[in-house]
Image 1 (tube, one colour):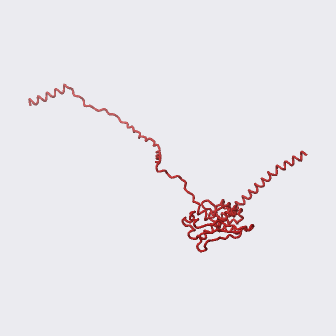
Image 2 (image 1 turned 90 degrees about the vertical axis):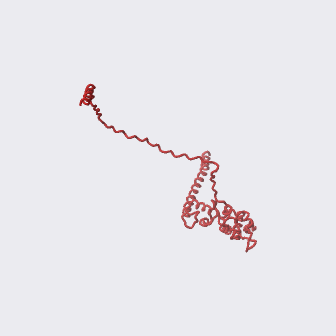
Image 3 (image 1 turned 180 degrees about the vertical axis):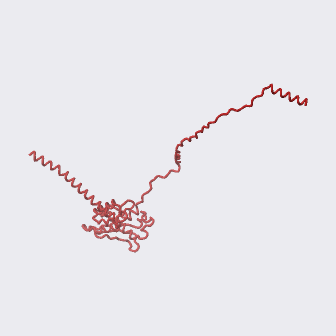
Amino acid sequence: METETTIKTEVTVQEPNNYIMLRVQAETQAFELIQRQAMMLSKSTLVPKDFAGNVANCAIALNVAKRTRLDPLMVCQNLAIIHGRPSWSATALIGMINASGKFSPLRFVLDDDDNPTSCYAVARDRESGEELKGEKITLDMAKREGWSTKNGSKWLTMPGQMLRYRAASFWSRAYASDMSLGMYTQDEVRDFAEPPRNVTPKANPFIIPEPEPEPEEPAQEPTKEPEATTIEAEIVPEKKAPAKKAGFALDEMIKELEKEVNP
């Protein structure tokens, strides 16, 4: 009995370890497969610039495709990175809702077909038959939110289409957030997301910057004075005229005087 108990205990302990190792191996193989697929997508000329040559972005797109059960190329074509945020195109979002089979095709109700000022999206839940009505989007809302006051805004040139796109986005977050994965549409991100700001502090004009230290000049080596050349010269003593004796000079003077007196 003791032997059987020991064997059963060992089997019970080993089973979780084997399961963990098999799971790690399966995840490693799946990661390597995604890497190869992402590498292939990044080299394709059919993907947008956000994914061309970017293996990491392609791997994320493959992950999104797996979670939404969509074609990876379709995800790359309709997923854009705006101000660092991944966002769907509005047409792709509407297509995902209509192709899901959970709802009836999405319909848009305008207040005026020619000059619309408001719109809301509506669909019916196929399982319960309940009518699902989205929030009403108006041009006044777009103005108050600042969507239509931006330079180059499409709200001024095609208000009807923008009302439909924004109504579909609001409807999807209310009733089908699992399809959009909580991401906004490209038009929404452009309307409310601000581009990255430069947060580098500006120089204070009241603070005088300290002068930069002048570069030290390299120490110059002391100049060597030219060595004096030694010239050997022989000193010749000056020859002096022999001094005449005082007595001899006096006799000559007397003789000269006598010649003058007695010529």
